[in-house]
Image (tube, rainbow, N blue to C red):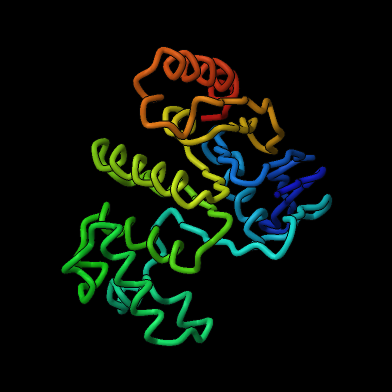
Length: 247
């Protein structure tokens, strides 16, 4: 579904160009789940923004087969504080001028699915971090995406809330058969949710390795010996890049 060929990206800062991504190539199949990990500041989010069409590469190509509907979840949830939970969830459909009755049905269904019943008229500032993230997830799902891009969506949450939402994302991937691309700095999260794990080097980022992880996207995988061994392997692959970063 997604094919990246020799993509490179740089940013201009104080009159100088800084290379962020260098000659990145990989493919993601339909209904696959891909996690992207790497050292802090290496360009993981920039790569996700290229895939989502928010940024354009300096060179190389990025192609998504067909006219695919995409949803994106940002690191800071990206909710509008002046809109209610229901209005935030239905925003994408409202912008598409979808019939109000249909919007209401979709929003009500997602509020129930995300365990937000009774909070439809609340504002984001009245919710916990975990609830805000569920609103962001519901908003992305409201447009019925075929591809879901997620930029460290759970990074600000406590461990128990994070694990619960990982299970929720897992359930969504399985039920809706969505192709997912997840940026994360958590090795365990990458191993749990990514059947393909792309490991980036420090900046300018290149692909160190693409790791197949067929056991992922299974609720039992987290407690398996295979999962623990995969986490150890990923940590070893990343160790040199993290230790080599400048302080």
